[in-house]
Image (cartoon, rainbow, N blue to C red):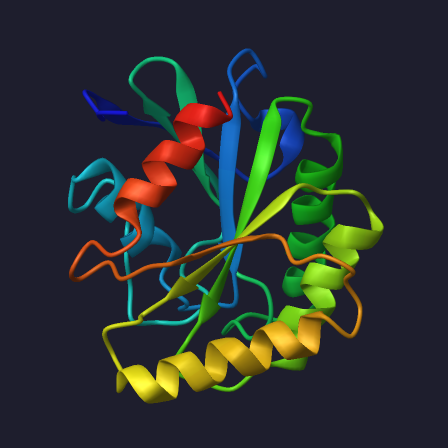
Length: 195
């Protein structure tokens, strides 16, 4: 698949404000600052389409980007730490799960995992929750260029071992780097195959 066009459509605080569910959607989620916006920009080859920030919890809305006038990539708020009140975080979480569970045009949820660190309980718990609820997911390992390859491999292997305590079969997994475009062909092929 070639990305011929990509445009920001709108940001929504909750499901009812999202664009009409008339086209397939692939959403991206992960802990705050895991690289969701950077990965989307890398996939579409357009810096600045999705807004990036070094500040955790920057994305606070459901952001729709129309790709090739045929499908949406969706940048979701991060889960876990964010520099906001507990009440606001709880509201985001409710809105997130409403989108994930009720959005009929959502094809796959890409769950992003930072490869620089060992497996985190919050990520495992989130993935298991998706599994329990029948949410189709892809695991995208991010920032593979930020550490030694041996450390990256170790962390990914430990993550898979942890997941296999709960899963009979692992979801699709793709290693990515927004810097050197690692994983881009695999993601584009996956999107094309699942439209």
